[in-house]
Length: 174
Image (tube, rainbow, N blue to C red; front, side):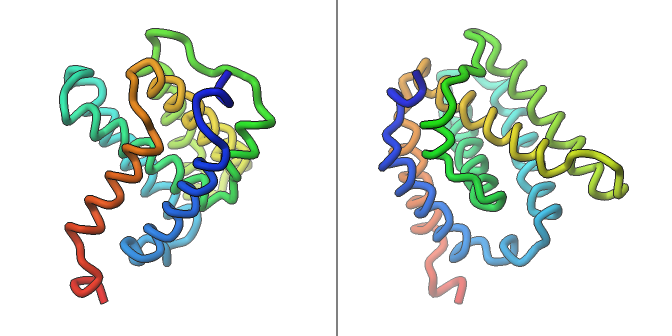
């Protein structure tokens, strides 16, 4: 079902766009270790959760936090080497339970946070597998929820990246 909601060609293009955006506009994050970058991503997702759970679904703030969540998930996918279009084609599982978006979002972020914490303590824990599994589940959750909200997720995410790029000119960065 999810394959019908999002074009694999457009998803590949967006994932490449996200990678270039991160390399150009977030170089201070790109230089961090993988575990530190994943912690950074989880912190962003928790910040967006606060907005998603407290603002009306129709509000501009909620929509922006939703789009920004998707952007962070694609960024995490790039960090972890996950080809989202390939996963979309290979996975017919539907992780979304109608009306349970926030509950599922919370659970998945909690699992990501546990894996991040395990890196700090050098625990015997399947860190990478947990990151990969939950980033993919968040991706599928967001694509499904975008459909239910009538959000064109790739288009709106591309527009959001463009707005950041306009706000921060390369002349200010370099």
